[in-house]
Picture 1 (cartoon, helix red, strand yellow):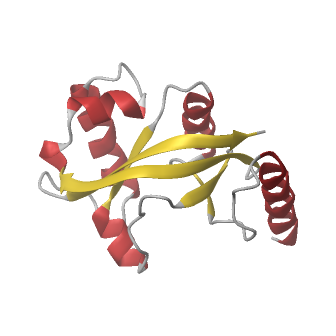
Picture 2 (cartoon, one colour):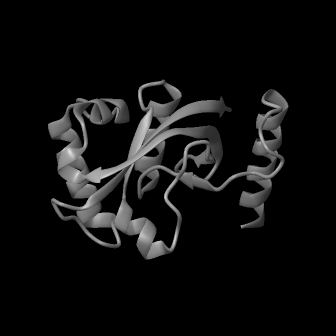
Amino acid sequence: MTDDVTRQREFWDEARAAHPELPAEPPEAWPFGATAAQADGLLQLVLEGVKTATASALGDYEADGEEVPRVGDLAIILDGAGAPRAVLEVTAVTVVPFDEVTAEHARDEGEDDRSLESWRRLHEEFWTEHSATGFAPDMSVVCERFRLVHRC
């Protein structure tokens, strides 16, 4: 664990050297997805500029006692091995029912063929398997947009 914290701190110091406007304390670090393969694949889409949005189940934030992201929040994004690879800044957050997620948001998530139909299928499967609250057609979804601030 200490090695992970050390790596994240060193990565944050590198990011701050390139972007002095970043705060002194590193933000939370996390990977996309629920598996190492998902983390690597989704990170690659971010680094290629294809993925500029993400979605989470509101129920997972509530179940974990975590706050919903806010505009301006920063995060260190980890790869599948737990190494810090990018810094993202949240640029927009909306909470909508699953069936009101837009085609634009689905496209900006960058996955599969980038269609809304594919987004719905992939996210229903993901939340059915990995969400603390499961999937429901009327579930609330936290839709985030972000920008890539720094990458290694």
